[in-house]
Length: 198
Image 1 (cartoon, rainbow, N blue to C red):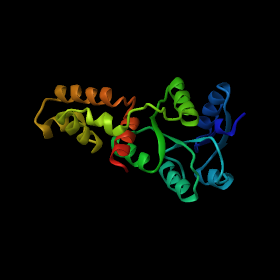
Image 2 (cartoon, rainbow, N blue to C red):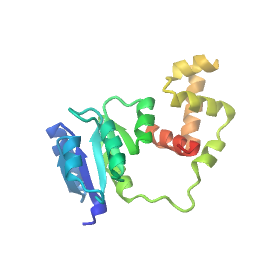
Image 3 (cartoon, helix red, strand yellow):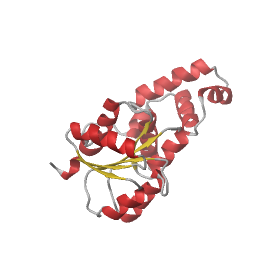
């Protein structure tokens, strides 16, 4: 099996590690598990292939700290971050640190496997529109709503700040997701950061 299909699971919860490893092995992936970020870093070489799955909250080094450490060591592995408390500021922080995706617990098995496949197999298509062109298609109000979303504000706060109803915010938010083609909050944040060149 190609090394690109190896998945490194980093989680301090033995039950979670075992369940995720079993799921991925049944899907044909090679799996290595680590009880801590430190153990993963100690066992991983610079030219390692595959992808990494890590929890945000762990004893010792956190998942966010792991992303930073991987960058510093030149470990260019796509990393999927799992958290029980996802919000936009966390998603922005994870993407800026190099995360490929951020999934919120509880994660459905099919969504988790799809994220893994995308991380290890996906390559950008030649005709894929750039993030710049996707966001250019947004109306002025949709861009305002997007900016507020990226600041982590909930719909009610956005409505108050922009002087529109919460329902109107929801409509604009749905339009932003549709026009950008983002399938999740994490993907929207990642696309926005790419469009800004961050």
